[in-house]
Length: 569
Image (tube, rainbow, N blue to C red; front, side):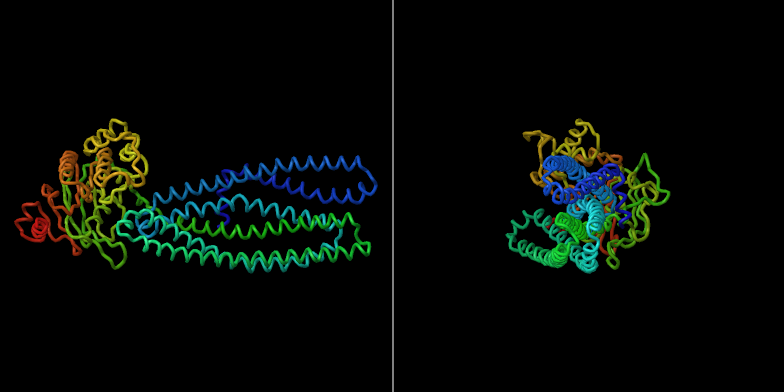
């Protein structure tokens, strides 16, 4: 895992190396100070060598000015390394998520995914910058301080190092506890984010049902779980830090007592003892930094593990030998298709039907019969359990996903508009389309007249998910998007369900015009919208129970006729 993480440094290797060099030089500046202090106390001050004292003061000032510049580089450019790595990882995971199958998003909450992309990667960025830097500086200072301390008094140094094994053992023991606690904490914050995103998105529903108490209880419950997880992580953190600080304080006590004894017996002079105390303080700083690194490492690496969990989900892939298709006519054929979302929950059973190019086929039936599922199988949002689906006689598994989906236009019942303006949402149907093409698509969808009444017309901001528009207006923008795409195959999944009767009639005329020479699959609950379909298929949980045109199904006086009579009532 560490090896895999290190590859993200490659684009920034020279900046990273420069950061490490500056950090190393900063450490060297720190190592000089105690030795200079030793000379000042033992020689310059007792002997009244004021000129040399002033010179060495200016030398220290010069070193600290250099150190300031080095610290600026480390703090600024070092953080840029972390930000760059974070940015590349965020782009990588977002690009990967774009290729994941629908089933992944069925099983994962939006808020939880957002938490992984934002919160987890923020911690990873901090680890990417501070982790190597802290580790490197700590080792340099530890080795450097040890050499200097041993040079002053080897026996006092050996006494100090007796304590180190206890510190290392304690750190290793608490590390495992911290790892588990921080992982649990991250899981709980992702749940909080997921439920928060869900509650805010559904705020209008909760207000309409006056269910703010219900939402509050749900939020409090999730917040309690998060607080409990954080308590466990902070408890482990408190044990870790308090124990380590006690051992470090114990080292101070040992130095003071042993150093005092050595001084009284003439084994060390006062200047050397002061320098030694400074080195001990310097020696403790990298130890504290290493302790902080362990905490940061646990936090960052747990985020990286969650990052890898998503990256290891297999994306949608073209089947071996898949090819692009051109000049599509639009003949669709289902051959003995079975499908289930989960094992044991079959949705489609032995479904077979054809949609000749240029024809319109309607799918009707009760909820849960698989109408929308049929629509999702054609562009291969899901794979079939058995059987096959062909487009112009070619199994859709033998067609690249990009080529397949470019030739299919979909308007779904649950319209999704992106945050932005009207123009951007219509133009989404054909990247690079001219403004005239966008306006023409809006006219075909009978939305242009409404847009022209707005103060900013096509540049009007529509809010998050188009919240500033009515359901019918959103539906018509979605339809305009498909008009702009102008595909040979159209899938209309309750495409006019949110429209009033007058607007629906207008759009049906436009859809009829657009459908000429194209293959159209329509899902509808309003049977009045499918009377003119070339073929009407009645679906339920057992499969296709009836099919034919409107007149033929009425003559059968079966399920379709009953549905029509019930809707009339």
